[in-house]
Image (cartoon, rainbow, N blue to C red; front, side):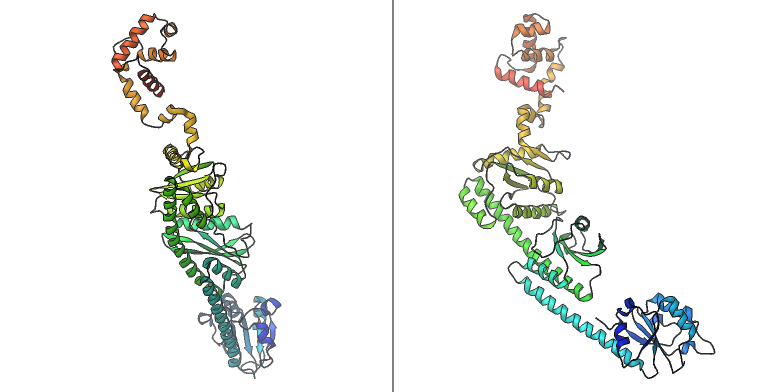
Length: 508
């Protein structure tokens, strides 16, 4: 690091003597520059964090500069210390200046007559230059190690591990869905900070713009978040726990290098994802064709074993590609498939994603669907040899989903029976149209009520007539009249069954 006030005071050739405001904390401060000026207000030409040297001409008679405002300007500007040369203009430091420096907490150093300002300035500038050189060397070494890591088989993981080692802090990567990419680094995000960091990551991804954010989290720690990818096509977020301080220039340059390499790695991963997606679709076609053994061997070589039966087949509606929802869902499913160890298989077919999971192990998939707010239908429990039928069931279940109930089960449809299924189609309108002649009939009798009671008694004339309180011949005449109006032969079972179904569908 650059020279400190302690190093200056300990340098024997300068023989600097502290007059006021020098404590242990200030002694450890780095001095970023040294400059001499006798101007009443030199601050417009100075940066903060340095040592100002003066002969004190501005405090000489006949019009001396007031000491207190002078010192206040230096303190407000962030000047680290003031060095005052004695034996040139002033034999000793003016009492008013010493008092002002002490009251404002500004370190005031007496510089002997024989100590040249240029020696102090060069000492500081050499230390700054040496620190910059060391920082550059560290940065180059770190960037070389990261570049070498990128060439290893698991390039992305190696890059992040090298970044963690060089920065001596935790590093985490989130994908485009905001899910943590599991990389075997040495350090984890502190559990107390994880929710806040995950919320910040989700917010950055939702905005869809490239951004860098410094976040102060629980425990007064700093976290740097940087998006990966381009505006409208973000690939993820890199999170770096920088501790209690911000990154210096070399460490920030290293993070920038890692962001570039990680972006390339993720883009390569996207190309591989596209290839994997096409391969998964091919495997699904093999499974549908009944060529299960070939499909199982293919999947086992790439992703592990296929789920074992009994199975549940899911049908997921793909989100809008333009808004990035489809790619985010694919990434999340890929991650879930890897983490499940063979308990989840998925593939795309037209504008649907087909999933296959064990019947009793769908919790991870259901949680993912809820998190991404997508609609899905699931088949009844099945086996691989009935995959095509199960896919048709899941499609029918998907058709029943609503914004209020985005997850539908074919089991529920089956329990509701055929009429329950028809209620969710256009059958109600057809039934109402079929029974419309009964409403426009001139017969004063309630023909609909007559038919309902007759069919409830399984077409038995006497029990139905008794329930209606009419003679059985009257009942027969009304049923015949209804048959004529509806243009159906109610002596046949098929006509009676169709009429009963229409009556049930239009009861409400």
